[in-house]
Length: 372
Image (cartoon, rainbow, N blue to C red; front, side):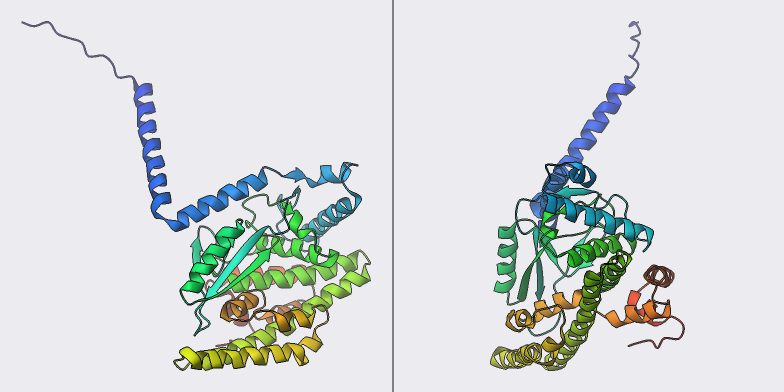
């Protein structure tokens, strides 16, 4: 009879290591395959790498201000940013976290280029979908050449395209967003409005509702900047912030009317010469408005820039993202005794308790007529 052989006891630690190694290799292979086959995955990966490189160059603003080797003009601007940030937290009730406690010199005059695109015969934007933020009608590029190549690809498909520079962006408080040097070229009023605008995104953001998110942040940014400068007895910048907000509302009404006229014209099937004729007529009307009543009513913008700038469907869509139903926010502001912090809270409560379209939630509050 054969001798019995005792089986060795399993080495659970080594077995677990092998399982984890196999799982890690599988995940890596899956990620590599996804990067190969998915354009979106490659885009998100590249954007993540570029942002990580920027974040590695962060320097604490407080230390830069205390450092006597920091140029005096930069120290003044950085001190203004910290003051605006503190005001946003203490007086406006915005969620600031660690946002704008650090600074990054990006080494160039443009942080990123933002691409918008639309059909030529309809005001119908091209959209992209990303984690957390949802569906958005634009795409940002840290690499200018990649931005131009993608714009050319959309143009080759017969779409209207619009590339614009951006000096700031928000990760909605998920990361400690630094202040980028590209924002520092703005005047003091615009710098403070930008800081408060981006902090507004940390406070209220509705997934896949870009026009609402940006328009709400525009309201908070300019109204908040005016209040900030008043608190510092800086009447010049306080008046400029108030005037800029009036300009934004003027442009909101103008672009809404232009969009209405375009939608009406695009309601009938158009192509070829007829399509170009209709577009040229309406865009010509828009430039006449900038040279005439609309442009002359602007207090802080140079009307000549608008009159000479390119116009197409993608431009109209991009311009309206930040200026949609701005007067609605002002109505709520006045109903809350011109108290910005109370207005922000009122908007938050209404949007959070009435899921769906945030504009519909605001229009359907008691005493308001619901718009179609």
